Structure formats: C-alpha cells, structure tokens
Picture: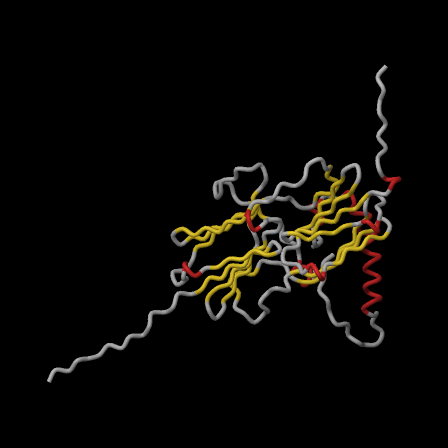
Length: 155
Length: 136
C-alpha cells in the first residue's frame, strides 16, 4: 500500500507510529492473502503502489515494477521466507510545492509493499537491478520448489 | 478513500487513442504522465517513461508541436507470467508549444526512466529607445 511518512502526534492514549505500522503489516498480510486471486482492476482501486508483474521460468522468479525516478540508494528489497518487501520513494526529484504547475500528474511519496511469493526462494541469492526506471528482482527458486522434469521414455 | 491515498493513487496507465500515433509493434502505447512547471527561464517538463533506454527515446519538434516517444526493450522470452498488474508498452505524447518558447534552446535528458525537458523562453525583444529627432 502507498503512504506518506508523517510525524506521529505525541498525544497520550494514541497508538504509537510503530504500533500502527505493525497493525498495518498484519492487515497487508491478510489483504495479500485474500487478494491473491482478485483481478488487478480491483487492486488498482485500492491505490496499491507500485504495481508489479511476476513471472517465472524453471529456475527463477522475476518480479518487475516501474519506479521512474526512484533513487536506487533508497530502494529496499528484502525477502524472508515467502514474503517479499519493497520500500522506497518516488518523486523526490520534484521542484517543491511553491512553483507554478501547469500539469501535475506524476506520483510522489514513500511506498511500501508486501507480497507473498508463490514458491520458496533462496533469499540469500536474490538479485535486484534498477535500470531505466524499472526494478527487476530475480529470485532463484529453492531446490524443493523447482519443477522436476521427468523424461518420458518411448517404448 | 483518504486524501493521501488519492494523491498517491496509481494513475491507470492511459493508452494512446487509435489514430493519434502509428503503432508498429504489437505492444500498447501509453501516454506518459508529466509534470510541467514554470521556472525563471521558461518551462520544465518531466515525463515518466519507465523501461525506455536513452537510445530508444525520441524527442521531435516540428512546427510548434513537440512529440515525445519511447520504445521498450523487448522483455526476455521463455517466462511464464504469474501476476500481471501492469502492462508494458511504449510511450507517446504530443505537446503544442507556446510562441514564446525558444525552440533552439530546448534540452532533453533521460535518467532512470524520467525524461526532463527544459524549454527556455525566448529572450524578450530588447527595449529599443527611439530617438526623436528634433528639427530646428
């Protein structure tokens, strides 16, 4: 889900920022599990950012997402078990709010997304490349997740 | 939906209407989202074109129309799609320039899928003092 960073108010009785974040993590996990089969159209309505594509071959999973203008140094990709976490920020290259905009269509803000992978991957061999504004995460499938090909003998 | 979600909400990629641009590939063409703002010197135009390499970008100027287009490098074959939330495709968008833009002075740069165009204003006509001759 997308979000903007904010300074938590230090009022008493309010849940802390981190508690809220933890709560949201739970919600996201539930959401991702439920939304696994829901069409992408519906997801868009929830304001999910970034949108991702996931593909596979026999050996690996490939995740791609479009993050034009993201600072690669601030992109964070982490994989733990079958959960992939993406964090970063887009649009920090903008001119600031005080200029006179004729058009303002580009996204800006911090984002975070959690995704449940369909198979186990080797977390320590995950590779992430940011090129031309597209992030590609290559994840080798774990040995037990690879399809075992059985050759069919003709008799 | 809350304000902040709306603000950051993903704009659905908008496909270029048929007939506006000739599409020679089987991939869709999208309208890149842009920010345009005023600077001291003129206008800045910033367009998101993720996946477009600098060599695959073209910025053309003819008459008063600025055309920006970019192709994608084909994605590797032999992969089976599992989740498809966005479509990949090229980009195409046209802008009409105001008269006061110095067309010779336009510069373009592409970095991390973001095209930045600087459109300087033409220098205003220098004020010229017209001497008035007096005839004695």
